[in-house]
Image 1 (spheres, one colour):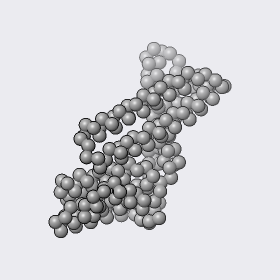
Image 2 (spheres, one colour):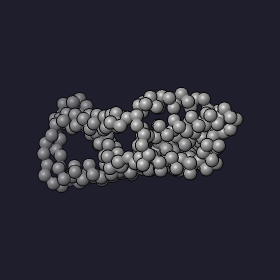
Image 3 (tube, rainbow, N blue to C red):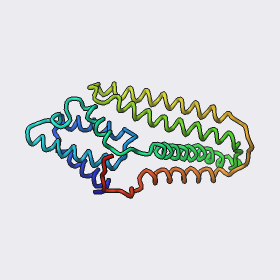
Image 4 (cartoon, rainbow, N blue to C red):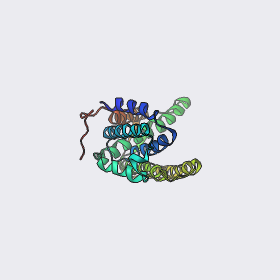
Amino acid sequence: MSEKALIKENNRLREKLNPHNKQVYEDILIYIRTNYTSDDEETEEILNELLTHVIQSQRDGKNIESVTGEDYKSYADSIIEELPRRNLWKFAGIIAVVFLGITYLFSYLTDLIFRLIDGAPTTITINLLAEFIHIIVMSAAAVGFVFLIFRTMQFTLFKNWPVWKESGLVFLIGTGSFIIIILLAFLTDLIDIGPSFEISMWILILLGIALVATGLWLIFKPEKNAGRYEKQ
């Protein structure tokens, strides 16, 4: 069964759970999906097995604890240990590509619009070494931001916290990280070293579109081993 079909089937089965089982399952689901070291498709297959067992337990008058035990986090960690490992360098690269594409697209598109309105030239000067430093720093910051948000979301699960406390922690971590990224972008923009050249802003905008499209294609492209599950 393909990953899309598994997701659809899992969503259908999830609606058969009673409120308690559904809440625990959804926490386990989020915990596993935000574990960026695991492969996505195999995750859906093992979640499908979990749902099947939980629904059978419900029919026998039991709750999800008869399958997972009382320590939900340990159970989720045991599932993660069984899953094939994701190529973290590839995953980080995809995040960096998408982030840089969005950065190029929106920053230069906004500037271009104002220049067209004012009748100003649509070319800018790029310092090659400074731009390279900017790309490295911002890529690392973007990857760190995504990984930190995932870890924060995992940290808040299974703690029986009120919603405001969970959301508040994620918001504070996310906002603080975003401010750091903005500060890093400002500081790297101050660097003015290396050879420079003139380039059309249209080219940079097209580059941004190409980077975003490439990143999204890498995220959503079907895998060659779709429909197969192998424990490692």
